[in-house]
Image (cartoon, rainbow, N blue to C red):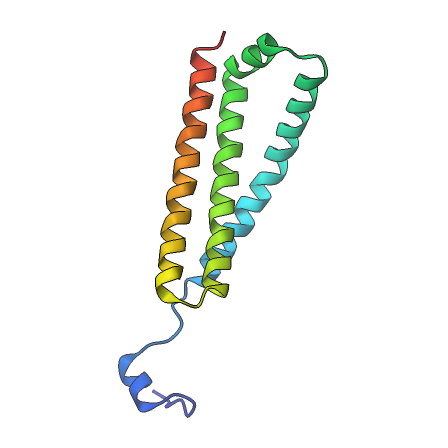
Amino acid sequence: MKSDPLRTDLSRVRGLGSAKDGTSHWWLQRVSAIALIPLTLWLVYSIVHLIIGGDRFSISEWMSNPLSAIAMLATLSAMLYHSRLGIQVIVEDYVHCEAMKITMLISSTLLHALFGIAAWFAIIKLHFFAL
C-alpha cells in the first residue's frame, strides 16, 4: 500500500477519510427534485381548475377520488423529503457549533415528520370522510 505524503501518521492509523455519504445525499436530492416536477405541475393544474369554478363540495369530491388522494400524498411526501434534505445540507454547511447543528438537525427532522403526519392525516380524512 502506497503511503500518502499529505496525511499524517495519526490519520493513517485512524483510517479516517471521506465518509462516502455525500454522493448518495446528492442523488437523493436530485431524484426527489425530478419526482417533484410532474407532481407539482399536477398539483398546480388541479388547484387552478378547482379554484376557478369550484366550491367546497367539488374540492371534497376531488379528494375522494383515490388517484387524487394518492397523488396528493406523493406530492406532499416528496416535498417534505426534499425540503428536509435541503435544510440538512444548509445546516451542515453553515452552522459551525456542533451542539447547535445537532439541535437544528433533530428539530428539522421532527418538524418535517410532524408536518408529514398532519398532512397524511388531513388527506386521508378528506378522502374517506369527505362531505
